[in-house]
Amino acid sequence: MHKKLMLALCLFVWPAAAQRIAIRAGNLVDPAKGTVSKDQVIVVENGKITAIGAGVAIPKDAQVVDLSKQWVMPGLMDAHTHVTFEEIPGKAPFEAMYLKQSTAFRSLQGVHIGKVLLDAGFTTMRDVGNEADYACVELKKAIQKGWVDGPTLQCAGKIIGPFGGQSKGMPEEVGGFWLHEYIDADTADEVRKAIHQNIYYGADVIKLATDNSDYFYTEEEIRAAADESHNAGRALAVHVYGGRAADNVIRGGADSLEHGFALTVEQLKMMKEKGVYLVGTDFPEAHLAGLNPSNETLADAKKLGDQIVERLKNANKIGVKMAFGSDTVTGMPGRTRADMVFDYLAVWKAAGVSNADILKAMTTNCAELLRVNKERGAIAAGQFADIIAMPGDPLQEIETLRKVNFVMKNGKVVRAAK
Ligand SMILES: [Zn+2]
Image (cartoon, rainbow, N blue to C red):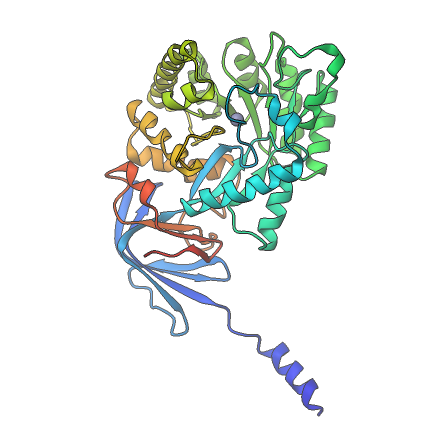
């Protein structure tokens, strides 16, 4: 037989051995149970966890990662991010970003912010829009191709809302420039069409913003959006603060309310009853002040900051399902996007949420809301190997999450422990 042909056949019959990694985990944190198991071995093959336990043998050909002095847990998730968006600093209006930044710029910004967050331990993120012309979708493709390292992304595409998107008070003659970021949809049929457009261009989740003005979606319009999203296997996330608009969102069948700063105890109870998630985007007061630093807004920031803590406290007491969501879109001098996201931990602590429940909100709860719990959110056989480690126990001190020094995503080490 021809030599070359024989070689080709050999390669076909005996493919190269899959790369195996064995992790020695000194302390394995299980966020679902709030427990720590000692001296576990995690075997990773082709991006997924194949075995885990104290007595698991390390395969001979495996590359060994020694985290025996570390605390190891599933990668973190954030259900409300804007990876391709950062507010233009200074006193520029919110709308300036749609006017001054191209989709290409936004995608490249996402490369940078995505890497910062991945290195900090966020292996999965749900991006809820403000991505110009599908900048997040393009970033997601680049990450999937392995061109750049970034978290596993779910993208929303353009945010769907009643006329005007999230712009305010623009003169009629400038036209609908917000369509760079939003889709105007003012009836149930228009909402359905907008959802089709987003899915066509690559959306994994549907995002509505309902109460930017005095008009907002009816219960029937929300129900149309929920049905259309669910038929296509996607979750429906709705930006809403409170009031009658929030009643409609809860009753209409949304999967999550985003923000919900003004939700009443009755509304939170209704959410608990219906199993609707709160993605509270619980802004720290300092961030709120930074959104528009004037004397007037400092007082406003304090008031809203207190309201957020109170609402989070109530939601936690009532037992509303909560998924961690940050919504960080501002920059602060000398601080990374990840530093700012971790600032939310103090707000959750101030509201009396236990460290175990905070970790759950950042892993298993997010995974359920994102509909990926069968494949991500836990360290278990069959799950993708999204694994992080740090030199202390986050169940004892939640701020230890800031010290994440090892990150594996889909079985690839993207940040090695020092
Ligand atoms: Zn947001």
